[in-house]
Amino acid sequence: MRAHSVPGGAFLLIAAAYLAPAGFAQDDAAWKSALDRAASARQSGNLAEVENLLRTAVQEAEKFGPNDQRVIISLDALGTYYYTQGIYVEAIPVYRRLLAIRENSLGPNHPDVADSLNDLAVVESIMGKHGDAEAHSERALAIVEKSSPGISGVQALAAGGNHTCALLEGGSVVCWGSNLVDQFGFKGVARSASPVPVPGLASIVTSIAAGSSHTCALRADRTVMCWGQNTSGQLGVPPAERTTGPVFVAGITAAKAVAAGAMHTCAVLEDSTVKCWGNNQQGQLGSGTTAPSSSPLVVSGLTTAVALAAGAVHTCALLVDGGVSCWGSNSAGQVGKSGAEPALSAVRVAGLTAPAKALAAGGNHTCALLADGTVACWGRNQSGQLGVPAAPQAAGVVKASDIAAAKSIAAGYSHTCAVLATGTVKCWGNNQEGQLGDGKTQNSSAPIPVVGLAGVTSIAAGVTHTCAVLSDRTVQCWGTDSYGAPSNVTFSLRSRTPVAVGRDDGAVVTPLSTLAGVYRAAGKFDKAESLYQRALSRGEKVLGPEHPTVRAILNDYAELLRKTGRPDEAAKLDARAQTTQEKPILVDVPTAPPPR
Image (cartoon, rainbow, N blue to C red; front, side, top):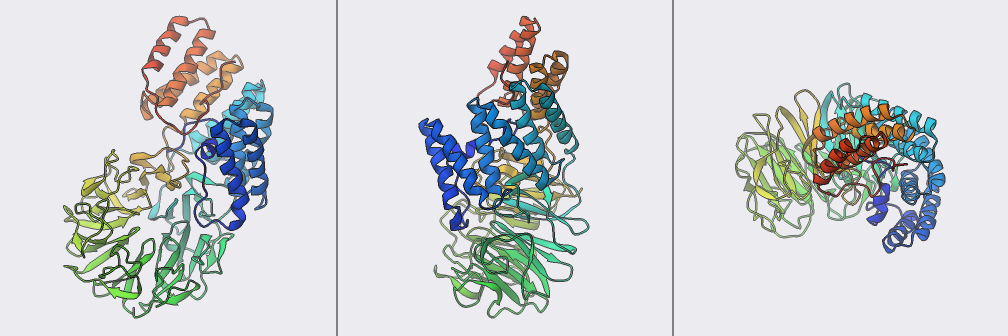
C-alpha cells in the first residue's frame, strides 16, 4: 500500500530517530549522526537546530553522490520540515530537486514521481503559484491513474529483509521495497512501492534469491549475478558497502540453484556440489572454518545436493535421496544437530519421516516439505514458527500441525507459510506485523488460513512480510509494509491481509484530494468539488469511512462548501468527520493544502 499523504513522510523518519540498516560503511557516521541529532532536536522542540542539522545531513549525504539514496532521505526530511514550519520559499527548491532526482532515477511516470509532484503542488498552491500547482498536481493524478494495473507475468518471487523481487516472463527481474543499499541494482531512489526493473542483468534469468539486503540471479548460461549490500563479500566480489549494478560472481559457471542468507550466498553446481561466499561468522559457508570469503568456497562433504535454503546465518541443502544436510549457526538447533555449537561443515538432519522435496530456512529455524504433503520443522520456536506450541526451541524435528497437503513452503524470520493443494495458504508463527495474513496481529503456532487468498502457485517470505504468486501471475503481499520496507523505517502502511503489488486502489485518493485543494485555492470551486466527491467516494470504499485521510477530505470539502455559501451541507460533512476515529498514520503534516 502507498502512503496516502502529502508532502512526503520522510520527516517521520527523523521524528522516530531514523537508523540506517546494519552494514552501512563507517563513512555514513557523520550523516547518521546529523539525522539522529535532528531527531533529538525535533523531539525537544529546538526547531532552528533541526534545520541546521538536516542541512548538514544533506551535505554529508552528497559526499556519496548527488543522487544517492541518503540525499533523497535528507532532502525529503528537510522539505517536510520547511513545509510544517511554513517556510514555503525554502521548501519549493528542495521539492524541485527531489522531483528531478526521482525523474532521472525512475523515469517520468513512476508513482514516486507523482509523490514529489504532489509535494511541490501543495507548497506552490499555498504560495499562490496556482498555474504551477495545477500543472504539477494534474500530472501527478495522471501518473497514478495510469500506474494502477499492478505487476503481472510473475514466474517466481524472492523476499529479502527489506525488499522483494520478482522474476518475470521473459527472464527479466523487478524489485520493490527498500533500496537503501542498491537492492534494485542501481542508485538514486531510497525506496519504491512499485516494481522497478533491475538493469544490467545482460541475459535471461531463470531463478532469483534475496538476502537481508542483497539479491542474486541465476542466469540461463548458469552464471550468477548479484547486487545490493556487499559488506561481507556476499555478492562474490571483494567487500565494499555496495556495488554499482549487478556483478558476476567469480568462479561460478555451472550453477543450477542459488540461495541467499542474511549476508551470505550459496549455489548448487551441476555436479551437485555446493559453493558459498560472504559472511562466515557461524560457519554458514560450510568451508570448515569461520573465515569470511568473497570467493566461492566448496561446502565440505556435500556431493548430492539438488536445492538450497539459506537462513539468517545457516544453510541447508536438499539431497538427491530426499535427505537434508545443514551447516552454520545452531544456536536453536536450526541445523538439526544436538548442542548449540555451529556446524562448520554439512550435517545430515535426522528424524525426517519421509523424503523431503523442498526446503525453507528462516531466521533461526528450518522446515522441509515432505513427499507426503506434511511439513517438518526444527530450530527456534518462540513464536510457534515450527507449527507446534511455542517454546524456545524444538527438541529435534517436529511436524507442523494441521498441514497435510502442502505443495510449497516459505519461511520468514520467525514465521512459516505453506501453499496447499487447494491453492490456499496457511501461515503460522510470529504475527506482530500481520505477516500471517489473517487480519490480526496475534501469534499462532497453529497454521491459520490467509484471508481472501486463492489460486496461489508459490510463496515467499521476508523478515516480517509474505508474498504469493497467483495463478494469473499477479502478486499479493501482506505484513510490515507489504513491499518490504525496513522494520525501523515506515515507508507506508502495513497490511494484515493480502494486497496487490503494484496496484493500490487507494493511491489515487491523495492526488485527487491534492488537486481538489489546488483548485479550491485558485477559486475553481466547481472543479474542486467534483474531485472532492471522487476522492471521498474512493477513500471511503478503499480506505474505509474511518480512515484519517477520509476525515481530512471531509474537512476540506466542508470548507469548500462554506466558501460557496452552503453552510448546512458543510455541517453535515463536519458531523461525518467527527465520527471518524484518530488513528496513527504515516505523516505528521496535513494531507491537503491548508485553507487559504
